[in-house]
Image 1 (tube, rainbow, N blue to C red):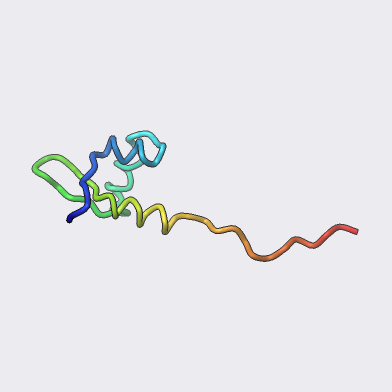
Image 2 (cartoon, rainbow, N blue to C red):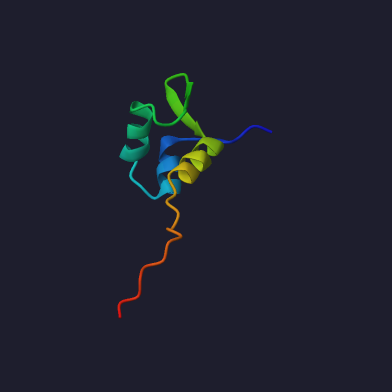
Length: 67
C-alpha cells in the first residue's frame, strides 16, 4: 500500500509549524513532493525521513565534574 499524501497544511500541523515552513522546504527543494495538478502533496514517508534526518541525538560524552 502506498503512503498517504498529505497537504501542506497537514504537514505543517504534523511538524507543529506554520504553513510557511513546509512551503519553504518545497521551494528550496529540501523535501520531495508530488504535484497533483496545481496542488502539492507530500508523502508521509518523506516527512518521517525528514524528521529522522534532522533529529539531533544527545552527545555520548560526559561533562567533567567540577571539584
